[in-house]
Length: 336
Image (cartoon, rainbow, N blue to C red):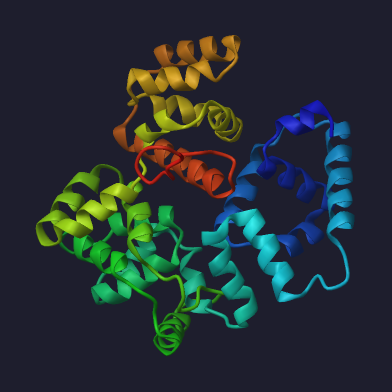
């Protein structure tokens, strides 16, 4: 692949491929993606500019080569699907996807919620029992679940998180009944999580990572009710400052994935140590430009800073699951 094409992120290359396919074929491909992936690729397609003919050619050529290499008899076997998805997504995420594909069931009502604005989902769930809300939020991606949680009654948020943390699977019958209730109100296609892998402390910690300024109050409420659970969640959490513990190679990979304008906003509230961590992993020219932009940037609303940091954390966590970035500190794996 040309140097220019290699500099682009995987999402950008996917966007180039879809634009090259044309409207009808691109639409067919997008129908098979989840809500979050459609949003990411769609945003990349909207932002693409100055794509050379050579870049398009090399992206198409590489895609074609990869397909040829991966096509073989027995592609549809369960073991092959498990291996490929585990390699691509990491063991944790692959488990739920494999269950969705191989289980042969559909959760259309729950899936529809993924396409809605967080405020609208909050309105739907506001008067439901906390256990129902915990199940629904466990089904969602952590960043969307965190946004929805912020739109729920403040008095119930800590209880919902505790129920998520102590959730140990959901009976398939109960999940089907919940899905049918939601399906009466919404439509959509795609699979959902089955009973295995639902909830747990890790899911609750990931949501807490992304709730923004409400995090401290929620942790304090949980600690009052269940101190051991609070400590377990604290140990699993990963916050923006924990990027200080990221290895330099991983930081450089992260910088390739994060838009410069988002990073500038995110760093407005970062400590000097973390800023320097980012700067030292940039080229001298890029580092100086970033410093100048930060200095020239006027006041930024805290909500904007938190949103930018959330977006970067989601990217960092995905890269960690893909094995492209090692996270130290809270929630990171220990190495000996």
